[in-house]
View (cartoon, rainbow over the protein chains, first blue to last red):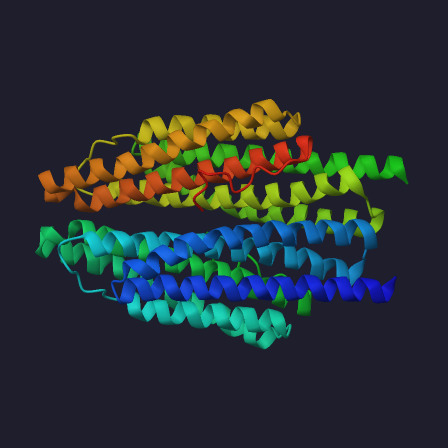
Length: 221
Length: 221
């Protein structure tokens, strides 16, 4: 029984990591679509989301089966519940990648080409945070997870900064209105991606150190 | 053991319902703050969110304890996992209520008073959806849950409509820019509240009918 359980748990973890890689690729593609003004890559992200949703359901069913058949307790139980939440967070990051890809698609169509302002910077940080959170989960490394939490404040500040920069841009030239709104959408989606990678990091810390860091002062929802 | 389990499960359900009522009140207050341009009510929502976050953690711990001590299987296990997800959805709706309250707060400060466009309509639908989803959970009523799903498409359409209405408004009078952006924020938060109540309704349907309606065609993330 015990060996059987460990094997199933490893399988579940490896599926989450596989899903993480898929979402990581979609996020990277969505951001490339924005930065390179590339509608083809944007479409690719939108059609790849079905696979992410399918994996989420599979992992969710795996969680239920493992709980029902093996009835784990203590640390194993908490790890499985953490996996369930991380699975959900990953699926939502996938949704934000789709939103970003849709914005990229619409930006290609706006006649005016706006400067991307803080978006390249935010994209870089979001990708780093995601990679760190996934690595922290793979190695159950609380220290690495901690560094994700620290980046989240920077993303919040950049997102707020985007708001005032876009308002200034539109006031200077009203032709940038539609494009500017699209940039705000991308900024907000990136800020949400940062929040969700923060959730993943918090789950890792919670599991490894069994202390609650949720609802820390900077969390926004 | 069995009676003990049923009592604990009822306790857990009743805590979720209590949390649901708290979030329902915060959402109603946040919307009243927007509709009546009332900063005092907005502040009330912002300070009430701590209680919601505290309840989420308590319910989450209750879930872990119940799984660890009672090791339920089959239908009971699925109900507990559904409760865990609904708990998380409720907490996130609470966060959106805070976001709406913050927008209300900033709207009070904008010199220009904008028309609220579709916001009153969206507010009414969001509150109805929330109430129906919570009732569907209380009575495990799949039919009621189904009606929540149907309203979600309307909210998506209204949110898209808001976007073009606000763009028109700003183009006509650039002084409405800041207020218009705030209205878009509120609209988007309401659309997310509708998504999350839809998630709750889907969990109820999933539990009562054991079929997956997640990732239905209209879901957006």
